[in-house]
Length: 306
Image 1 (spheres, rainbow, N blue to C red):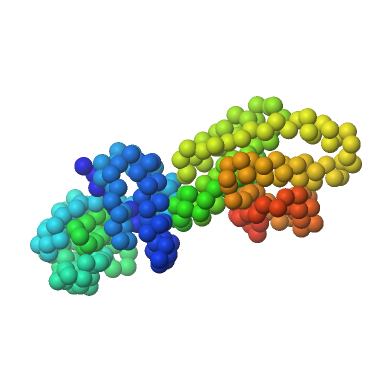
Image 2 (image 1 turned 90 degrees about the vertical axis):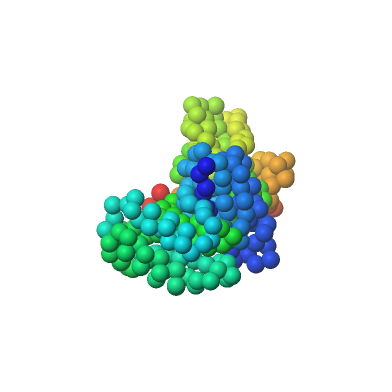
């Protein structure tokens, strides 16, 4: 059975609320991998998972590793490290140990030195503390965990820990990136797309499918907007039409927000990127509703967003 060690980072700063965020992350991992999940302080253990790649997309995951779990006995730790080193073709190595169980008789520094000496003795690989070809990690807690590979996750906070928000999703790059950024801040996203009955809807469904890798099952509202646009074209000066389109989109999105018991609306707005995103026009558009509006890309340029 594969044992996977999941680390988080920002969750560790949550003090009294830490348990809530740990439980939410553990729940998301369980729902995504359909595996047994065990919380330990500072880490989460996953047993029996088959498709580990999904962890690359889960907000809240800082990194994850397939590990060997052994009894926290010094001789067994040395043997596991030596076995791992022998499997590698690397010529240089370092040991990076962490001891969270203070009852273990050796400090982290002692583990680094003594396990490193054993690996050198049995393999003749050279120690390189700054740029090793192989880094062997050792963590001593209730059990000891030995491993050499770390895969990165998105980091941030687990989806759902901050509540639900509604995101206006267009077919461009900005709104999907804004949705992703809010997911990594713990938001579950409800998507809303305004359409004119064109084939563009297929692209929106593809976007939602991609973004669902980060938050799991998603809900998307596809709102027909052609008749509204036609009425506005009949009655409104062309230079004001886009502002009115956006105001009505915000009003409709606010109604969906209430229906979904969400707590705000997300846009992909980037200040002064297009005419509808000047300070004056953003103010005119946002003033249409009372709901909180979140624009995580407001200070980002197009190249940075892409």
